[in-house]
Image (cartoon, rainbow, N blue to C red; front, side):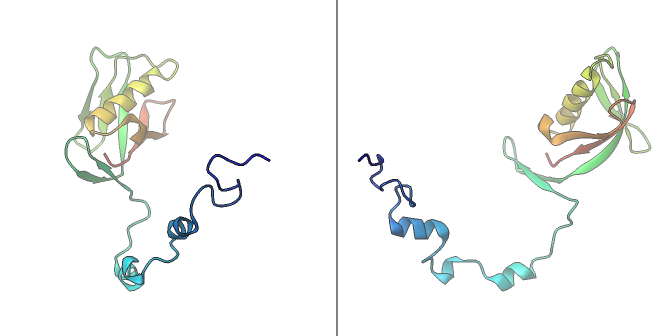
Length: 139
């Protein structure tokens, strides 16, 4: 009869001793180590539409998610992103509006402007048009 290499017989604890399994489940932990439920309920709740993310690469930055309006001008000479007077943004991208290449460049440009990763930039609406609504997660 073959046994598993961890000596547990292959059933249940996956090689952990019973005391380790209880500690992993939080059993046997003293009450002083657990957070006070009253203190947790006293904390003010965050708005559900606002999410936070930390950037560790340079400095600790906490920025809420934001939604911006962007007018895209494909086939431009240079790629740049400027803010207009009404609060919307104008993006000049070098890529043509074929096969989503202008959208990819727009996402990279917005990620560079707001110091976040490209995965934190989402085109919410207007993927096929020049006016877009873009969500930028905290950067």
